[in-house]
Length: 332
Image (cartoon, rainbow, N blue to C red; front, side, top):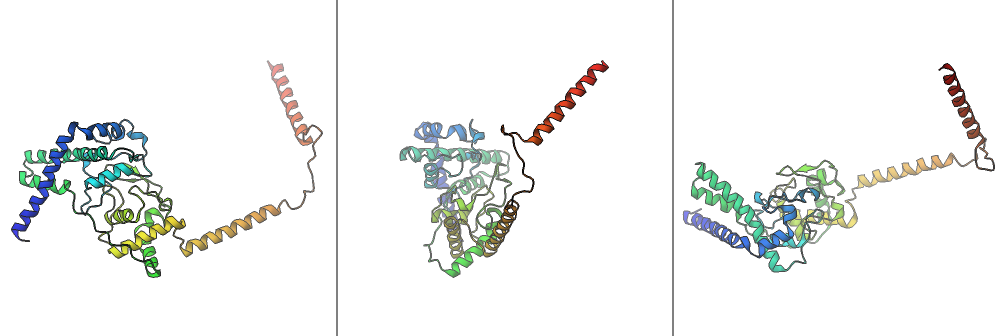
């Protein structure tokens, strides 16, 4: 790549980073800060460190914005755009303690997104400044690293949804079993009940695909984005390097089939389920046959509803208690 092109690219990366920093500084005490304190502080903490007073009650721990890593994005470098952050705030994260704030005015949501980004900008800038002070990085290298870690990349290109046919159906099932079944289960019901740690050491369970409740939304483009990028900082990988865009669409359509049909319905699973149902019916029939004929010795009850066997047994036990008590008393 020509040197001039490299310099232009670096300038293009650094300019947005500087703009974001300035934008964050101006938002320090404005609408974004007030909105963040009103809607986000109790879980994400006043400093955006994920340690709000209710953070331990949300099941899945709130993300620390200071890390600079966000689960949901639609950009090539997985750094969320302003629109990504706004949509996450507006929609929330279904299946977690992250509430949806769609009722909040758009102006507040936009300001809140900018303010939220400030936490990662400040933390990353502080880390790099410390490395410059320690002689580990030059100032120019620190600026380039800051841009790499904070500037959203171009949006990912999602090709049009292709027609679904038998070939795509078969290929999508194969890819699902290769890439997803080990955690989410061959039929979309998770196999792993042991929580999987994220980069902060917080533990979560794989999603049950059959429920159709996904953190990033369950629209076709939402599912494609998650499969393409993964979820940064979690055990959910991205598959853009493993499969072609056509194959990713096959996987999207397979996930949507699992949601619609309540499972993938592999023939071997259906056969096993049928065998289990037959065995259960046979066991039930055997159990029922034990009571088809009346027993030879019927237990009778007196007019008060008490069994003679229980009366004789209870009387004998009472007699033993009385005799035992008398013997103990006579020895004292």
